[in-house]
Length: 83
Image (cartoon, rainbow, N blue to C red; front, side, top):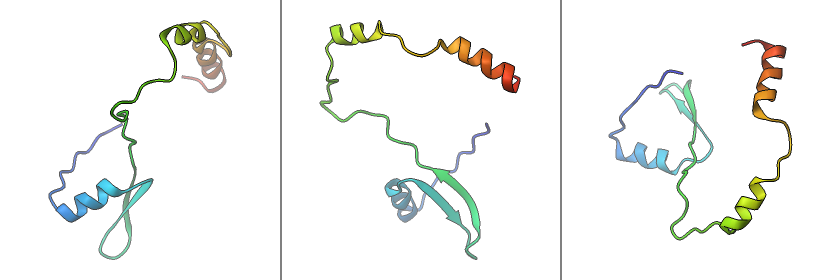
């Protein structure tokens, strides 16, 4: 996927983009849609966040396996849809 970087210098537009939630629709002066974009969630955890499981609990849970191995799933998808 190609990436295009656009630097925004307009403080009002920058504030609107920073406050946006969900899909963003960019429109031209005539109201026609130019592009749409999805907001990328902030992936940082809040300060002071602590996971509610001990290391022992996480180790125990990692031993419980359900479902199929990812390799098997990928193989089935490739057989059904191709590369």
